[in-house]
Amino acid sequence: MDTLNSWRQTIENVLGEYASIPYAYGDIQTEVISDRENDHYLLVNVGWRESRRIYGSLVHIDIIDGKIWVQQDGTEDGIANELVEGGIPRDMIVLGFRAPEVRQFTGFAMA
Image (cartoon, rainbow, N blue to C red):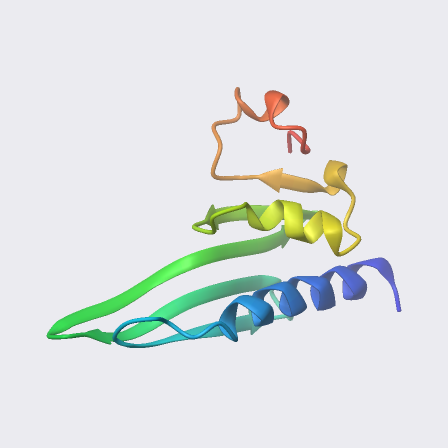
């Protein structure tokens, strides 16, 4: 398996682990949305809590120019750390939700 396909699988595995955790309250499902053709990966919450609609992206990851871009990260410990544990090098992960001038201090790729 080539490197990008391995990374795609790692992203889907990590997101799948989150999706398998049931919500403690409400009728809320967590869905993994994978678009391998365009390299977009989302973890989305969908459902209802009492009479309130719940919908939102918890995690958004893109692969752009051969690097993993974490565009949104609503996880407690940081999805990028889990990607590293899954074998993706830190210098290939960009925290896109951080301002460009701050990325140099994150320990991950700048762009």
